[in-house]
Length: 339
Length: 296
Image 1: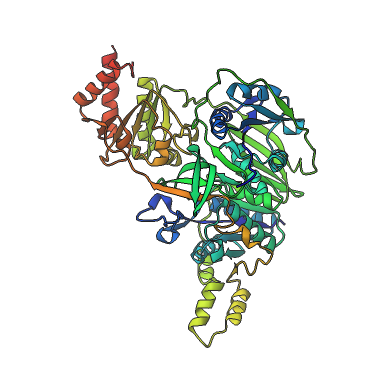
Image 2: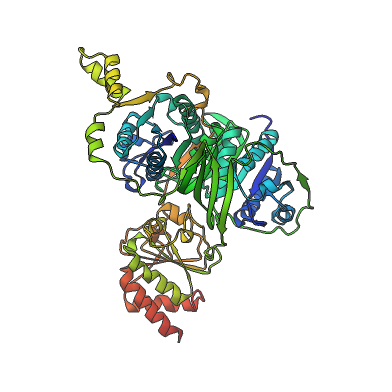
């Protein structure tokens, strides 16, 4: 397509004056994509008294930042945010816009894509830029939006060949956060907020937030359980093992859906991506969506009753056996050996 | 009185996939899959029915899909929906979320006035959560996503509790508004036996066409009329009925995103060191982990 820009934008989500980790991770990825395009990386920051966040984005590789700073933007509300982003995207037609696949990003990105007629792919596990031949036409430097799909049976590569703006959302932890060695000099373009009669269609009455106490991303050891544990009662084995080895408890999506473990401990494509030193994967069959969130662990120990479970294909150590027998033995032996 | 339109979707049961479900063009061969009522959409319908019970009004359900999606629309009747719309046309095939939201927004505009548009947060076949907000944008509506509870509706303002990352929020939303509902918001009510008796014979236009074609004594217009009178007609809308629709914005052609490549998941296969589930086996594994300073 002619006349497309080489701008990569990252929407920088912030809460109470602090940038979301996923946004900083996306800046790091955006830096790579911008380099590949020989283009520029722009951070887009909306909020109130958040110039410091716009400044912080340079540590993660931004070439420039767009800042809209206004009391109406203090907390995320769909219309004030989407209206301003629609305007920015329609005016500048960035080639790529990335959002965290958070509650905010998942509400905002589709509105902007809808307004600007852009292609949007949710929960990408990988983003690359490549020349593509699609339906016998050649396209230069398209964004490959890669994600598992359809119950994990396939990995799909999605493209937006004929529209100027390509968008994607990415879950926290999927991309790695890197501070750059020599940040670009700070270059912030402030854009005025334009008030609108629709601003207060949704008003926030109360808000309760707390930083997640769960730090799966930073945990060196994770003990993850799946639906194979059978009951919430049995899932206690996971907690026992985590206590013994000093690990964090996690679960597969099926285990979360079954109520064995809280959602903020879900590992996988639609949960958190982790890269621990060691992960125990117990009673987890190992669907691609789950593996996408943990396969970069340094060591994987799989425990499953089904010798054909896909999890064994990526594990470093495989134990075919019952969790009820293996885990108590493991804990007991480990305690003895530590002494 | 508050009128609601609920966007519902029949989805492949992704937990029970077998065989070849992907077509060569990379789209899904839905005919090969068992189809179910997307659960979050069902919860959205439940919330809409509760609004109706508490404040009066009507509940219409709308789905874009193949003819067999009418099975799900009947289930909506069994729960208490007043009216159902099947938006179906071969020209819609291959639509991505944006093209889908365009069709839905056109259909909703066609249906008429409403106070609430409800949808499930996301459908289990894609988990994108995009169609709700994309439809809201096209309808120029505000939105509340991740809805857990509607606390009350008064003077055209709904007080709503929603989930946010790391917590919860209560908002007041001016109607009309689009809401997306998350799992666990409200357990959908069971089907009413009485309603099943009535609505099991509800028919779409396509059903009635088949009947009319198979019996020269029956006239299609009369059949439609008859079913409408008994409220057993599932309104069927195609691109012909949605006369304002721009066909360049629908289907595969009207979708900005395309599937470039699909790869079956191939596993490298079995480099795992096999550990026996015995005390000896587990003990040697622990020794190795301790030696390598992975544990301890």
